Image 1 (cartoon, rainbow, N blue to C red):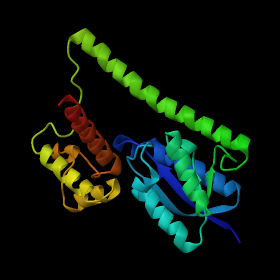
Image 2 (image 1 turned 180 degrees about the vertical axis):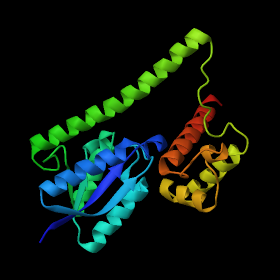
Image 3 (image 1 turned 30 degrees about the vertical axis):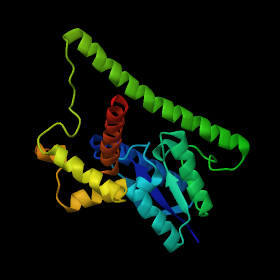
Length: 234
């Protein structure tokens, strides 16, 4: 009997949803599956979700986990480990979760990294360290570029954070209310989309696929940090 598996794809930004990333990941997974006698019976695509977001806050991953526990498929194929996470603790926490439930995760370009062999575990964690370093390096370079522009021109405002335009504070208040009520990032995103509350892109008349857990996480983290800074200054 041919082995069955699910394919898991993740892209971190809204601009990447329609780009090459999902196509590249799908092809890599399909090529591996074909070469190893595996049939991918279902795909789960995580759209605009950062690699720093934990697995329980990812709608596609959560849906996949339910499917794994209900229909007899026990294998998940990914292109690379950084599609699971771009922070070591998220990577290892996700792998631990899958192992505890008896599921297998295969990175098609990094075979055997799911092993419990201490050397393979060390290699996997080291790769996670470099994936996290790469993400932080990109953030650092973007911040440095903004600073250089500011030094040269005297200004570099960039894109204003969500909440600084008309009507956005009301949306943030609703997000915080839902979060304080016990909803996680994924549930809040679903609620906002169901209520027809527009994202900034939608308000600007641009194409938008709605709210994602990563949007919610960013807003809540920023609001909590701002609240903490106010408390410390009082």
